[in-house]
Amino acid sequence: MANSTSLNTITVDGVTYNAAAYDATQTKEVKKNDELGKDAFLQLLVAQLKNQDPLDPQDNSSYIAELAQFSSLEQMTNVVSNLEDLGKVVNNIDTSVLVGQLSSMIGKNIDWVETINEADEEGNPISHQEAMTGVVTGVTLIEGNPNIVAETDGEKYLVNISNIGHVYEAPVAE
Image 1: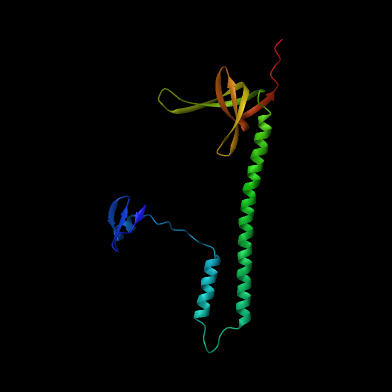
Image 2 (image 1 turned 135 degrees about the horizontal axis):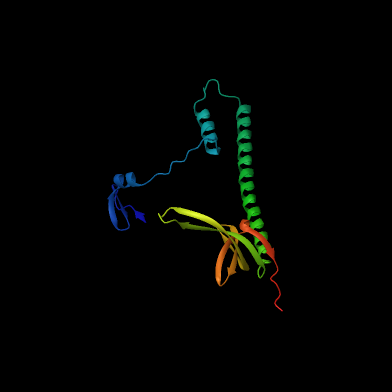
């Protein structure tokens, strides 16, 4: 936490720095802005008002037209923002529905392909695929992606749903 103790110094976490030197060490986020946004539009309108010829001012109807354009820009920006929020909600609903469907697989057998990453004698990475069979014991979300938890011979595996080849009922023991 920073607080200023004098005009030329700044104290951060109990250490006092020269304000200019401290500012120079702080990373400043530079945002590239290739689009004409609301702030830029208003700055242009104010600059236009400041720099007009007082003996030949611009017609009021042109200002009204520019304000209407600004209002349209603001509404389009709001629509885009709302569509982005709606997309997030739809993705969350899709994930929730998928998790619900996958949870119905608990207790069933699955066949899947497991990728095994190893190293050869020289330490170079190699991988191969192995067909696996197990019982679904759960469903989990990892970074928003649903995965199956399967158990084989007491060992648990995290299975990506795209690697599942077959889902079937466990055979009934007689």
